[in-house]
Image (cartoon, rainbow, N blue to C red; front, side, top):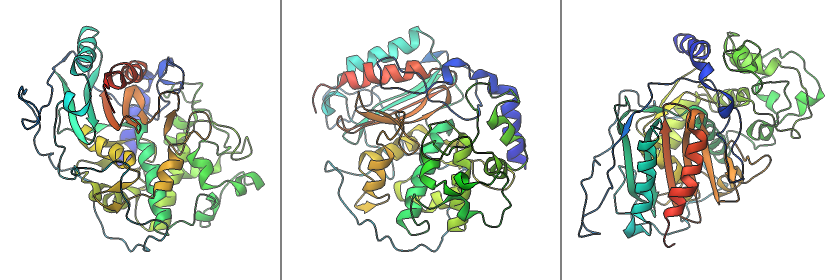
Length: 425
């Protein structure tokens, strides 16, 4: 209940920070707006950004001072509890698309941009723009060919390298991954399994044939068909469906009880409630909450040690927001997807799930990932500009965290300065 009340207070007090710019979605046009997100919680704006190019002395004769040290394990690390899993039958240990020199399970190794085919001057331009424009950027990390080539943290910010950052709706991409892992391991039959089949112990209002036909895939693609309006009103407005769900006292039940407005699988309608139902499905299918399942089957295998995941009043992990982790750990998640679900010789998530999740199924959206086909990348996207960018052709993972609305700036900066800094493949 404590976490639930805290989240509700955040909705009421701070949700007004999400104005029109954060209510639109990333598109494949050259001017991209930020991804629509769940409830907001923010900190003081950043004022000054420090600039340090990470360099590995073995790769260049001119080195700069690195701030890299072993990633810290915090007291808020996600719980790891052993669950009984069905052996994976749909996937086998594979190889990443590009052979890797090492795996950053313990921590990232560093290099210079030039050693990895990038232009440090172009990346420096981004830092100069951030500083001169007083943008509320807390961190920028760039990984190419598996090496951390750029890492920036803002001065005068409460966030540093070892402080977990709220990632808002980028949480949704983690929830999607957990559904994929649960399917791989036999806990869930597949994306065609009907949603109501997991909740036979509940009395669900407004039941009709459309609701009975709703499948897991419809939740993953934001095409559930529920009557839901998360776009037209601010999150502090009592008419907002997400606001109503979060103050209802039973988030999942509220969502399941919603009337149907459309046939499932047809109309894209952004609905954070879908992801809370997915989190509940993970709990039902595996017998443990999503944060515990993630701790064992996702976070631990790839070395994510900083994760903290808030829960609702019923103890269900927040499927659509309120996951916290450090930028370096965020980058590990992106790197797992860059490598088609493979990590150090083990298939953590099936390559088929990675491919389907990051394919533009409808409205530049896959399975809770935003997809920009025009520029060849996909992203886990959260309010204010929290981003995990993955660009497979460029072999790049890039992380941004922010403390105020910078979604449009972040998306444009990734394309202009990060992808624009690539000098060779």
